Image (cartoon, rainbow, N blue to C red):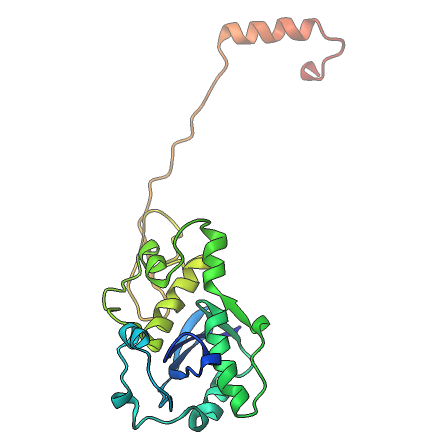
Length: 230
């Protein structure tokens, strides 16, 4: 199963007010695990940057001045995304911006039904608990110390780990026996297992006592044609 973890950064909070995308990143998952394939582009927004947004992601108009506009990368983006399910943290926000950009270029919108919103997943799994990406990284012991500013690619990478935990987590190794030793090997290589020898357990013999035999005989004497005396 192929899924795409997706994140964006923007010039503000509302595309209806003229705010635009300034970064988009996508990470490919197959069977819930990253394959190493990534898509990331900074974008020239062709509009002003709100100070609040710049404080969040640190991207300036000067830095973005020589970057492509959305129209130049849209075909490559759509090819990478394909028809895969989208994994997005606060999906309504990112889809609203993406669909505004697509609409301006005459492309069909990405339906909300294609997206899995990890904020909603987290709220269902941990009612009343914080559902921000930072809070979920802390809950699942995912190292996000390098996240001093928001960035679409970094956030997508962290989200791919959070998503895996939200849907059940990854079994780090297969334990066949408490005494086995699994040698460290590269991902995908055969696993060599060395199992320590164990001493066989001596069978325990339990014989009835004389008093128990007499009590059993007395019980049988009260029964009509007991099968135990046949």
